[in-house]
Figure 1: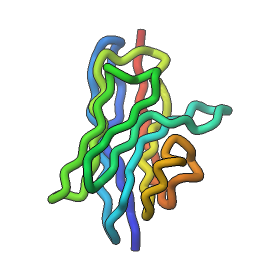
Figure 2: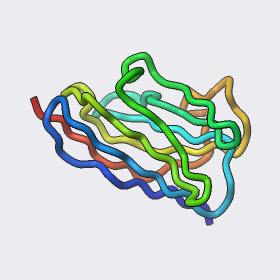
Figure 3: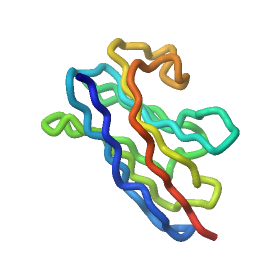
Length: 124
C-alpha cells in the first residue's frame, strides 16, 4: 500500500523557517513534489524533484527561499522553507508520480499519490 506521510508543519513568525518532511512507502517514484492550498483556492505547485537525478523545480513565488531535497535511503523528500511570509500560510501537500511526467510536474494531474497535508501558518 502506497503511503505519503507529511510532518513538520506548524506556526512560525514571518522571517522564520520550517522544514517539511514526506516519508514515502509502498513503491518507488519518479518525481515527488510539494503543493499548497488555501481554503477556497486551487492547489498550487510549490516545488518538485526528480528522484533519480535530483533535478529541482520551483514556483517563482518560492524560488530562493525554499529548497526541496531527498534522502534516497530514507525514501523521504524535504521542503526547507526559509524567510517565510504570511502569504505562505497554507496546507502543504506532498505528491508523488510513478512516471517521468516532467511536462506536468506543476499540475496536480501530474501526480498519482497525495499525502494528507500539513498546516503551515506564518504570523506577521
